[in-house]
Length: 442
Ligand code: HAM
Image (cartoon, rainbow, N blue to C red):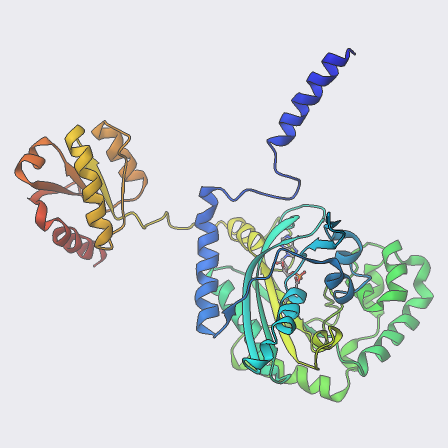
């Protein structure tokens, strides 16, 4: 092949690549925002109601922050971080999760001095170099909640689950299941780990490669393996519930009592293990039924009473959780949920003729100032095309302005539901529009 042809082919290829997002990353197009706004609006209302304040940390952090605090043997640290050296020689990472950065910010800004208990939430982008599939992306957004400080009161564990339960309910997600486990504490967990190791010691040959590694580094994660060779071994593995020390057992019992009090159904799952090592005591994951699809956990999280200490801070209890927004939307769509079209367009401004077109700009402003959502199709001249757009936008009324109306200082108000219309004086337009909109709601 000639050098010219090779260069041309390469250019073609470069052009094609340039027109694609990187694998596992997506544009959020105007049509998608209907879903995003819905999820973000509901979560914002809930976090406000329960007294959470927003926090936003940088997308980039020192890679060490995650390497030291998420668990050396975790998949995220081992395989999924986007890490790079800057021109200045710093090693940074695109944040793969939000808890470690929030704790870093809590300590960096001495937030404990402003209030002993901090309730924080974030809606932030995360990055994990995972194998993309339904509900699993390389760039995704999480809604996260973190309660840091105060006491290790099980009430806070329940409150985090309560808010996520309400989020799923308000989003009308069906078939929700909440799974709960306890990771114990510094006293009972090492004992349980040893028991797990002694059970799995006799099955080392049957374990997958990852689990052989986990056997040494973090035997609890053996319970989380989905490989066909490892999964059956879980059945006879020792049960953590029998080994919890009495304070951990009492803590779990109180969490469950609060959930019962709040009428939140749950299932205890002694094999639920989370992907990060910072958890102690409560861990939880919400799932939703989506026949034919497998999306993984929706909100998920737990208590992390030792994390602040491991950053060098004072022992500080903390609990939290996060949910992937894309995954929530995938589930809503898989459950064939319909979102109402942006009902926000109440009035459509229609013009006939050049002069009316000019005057329409002022009419739109009058409507906007009066707090009435209105749209137009000023680029379209034909009345028919404008009326079709009004229909598509779901407008309730059309206000129509032509030569005659300009001359008479009037405007036509047309009810797009029943087709009835009336000409009213222009200076009474707002009043008349409001009256009709009010009637259309009754
Ligand atoms: P996580 O389980 O890694 O926990 O992520 C929480 C949620 O984020 C998942 O249940 C899922 O809904 C969503 N998610 C995770 N990875 C992806 C992905 N690749 N694509 C789409 N969605 C994804 C954490 O990140 C902890 N920081 C949660 C936490 C907060 N624990 C205590 N506080």
